[in-house]
Image 1 (spheres, helix red, strand yellow):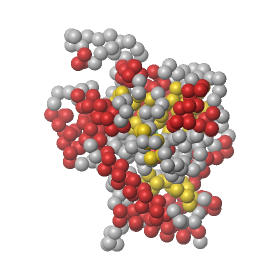
Image 2: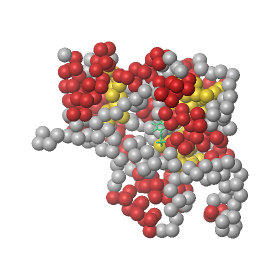
Image 3: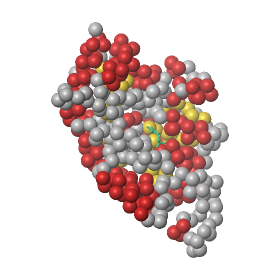
Length: 388
Ligand SMILES: *Cc1c(COP(=O)(O)O)cnc(C)c1O
């Protein structure tokens, strides 16, 4: 930051290298554009990255992954699925699409996550699934949640859209529940343009989900005795990932440790530079067992500062500091869900506090340490001014 030109630090920018571009271009030189060797290799390599020998299924998005999970578990009308109020609409849309009822649970405002105690209070005789989201990459307390699920014989679906690299006691999230669903949307940790991955410890679960993702056909073209011959076993969908996407994902995965290391060091530096500022708190993991994936650094503005959030955002953006809000409204407050279920908007105070009073700052690999210093300086200045 020399001051000769104003900085421009976007909230998110996909990290695409020459190697990534070459990987995609090479696919286009060949004859197989979907459902081929890159897809299978990406599944194996992603499984190796998360560890513990999971079965992986590449899909077209995280929402597709979630939808397939509920279809596979046979969830539908008359079933309740516990979902966080503080999440992306996709977490809940997937429940709606199979005809089940989402039961919203408020988050712990310190982490943005559900806790086992909060979930326990929401279990009904119709509850079939607990869906948890690792909020901005902060892992939920999975051992306690799994113990609760086992006591009540419930499935657990982990939405890991922002949690590539997040671990609880060293174990990657997504490996605790029955399935974990990841996103490769452009601003997430790694990208395939659009895309997602399902991980499961259970081979049978992964195999059936893989079938449902490809029309429900019984064998892929490499498994066919005669070309073009197959049977359809189930009412599937087409939620496949293309070979161009899978090749990009493989190239991205080769840099994932560097990506995570840069996020960690950016997060720590920014947190350090802001933590003593009066009237703000940083949403962070609250125990030593939890290793965040450091998707962003979310700051909650406390007291009267909270009412000035939008004004503060405008000032930050004008100074070249990109921001976002995770997530802009608790899902039960969004028009579709409010209209359908009519929740009292005051019922989710933890989620509302984060939606209404927080600002998400970038810590991705596109941000360098000078920019972190600039962001911290600018943020402090804007807050001081807002207090006057
Ligand atoms: C982004 C996001 C999704 C949606 O992911 P897509 O791959 O775009 O479908 C789902 N859940 C959470 C928590 C997200 O942040």
